[in-house]
Length: 86
Image (cartoon, rainbow, N blue to C red; front, side, top):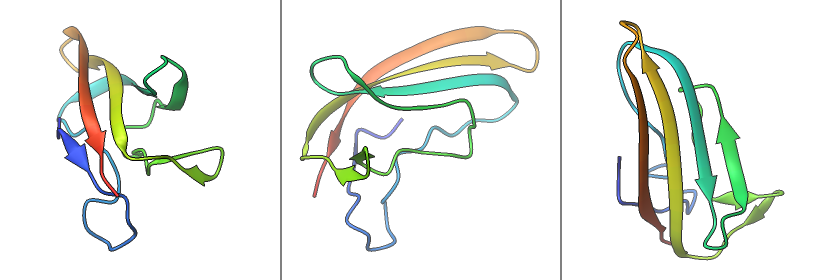
């Protein structure tokens, strides 16, 4: 997972994605500093663009959780923090 991204619409590093191979099931959630869900997807090809309710969010620290099940059945829960930089 990256530890920062900069959604400033310059075409580089504008979306926070989870990348992986052989993913069977997937749930990716982003939380703000108060624990509110601000983004969630079950589609590994979709990432978070730094917005919530169509508004750009402030720079700062955010938390993610990824529930991933691989094709061979191995399940993992991955958690961490990253920075949104504008």
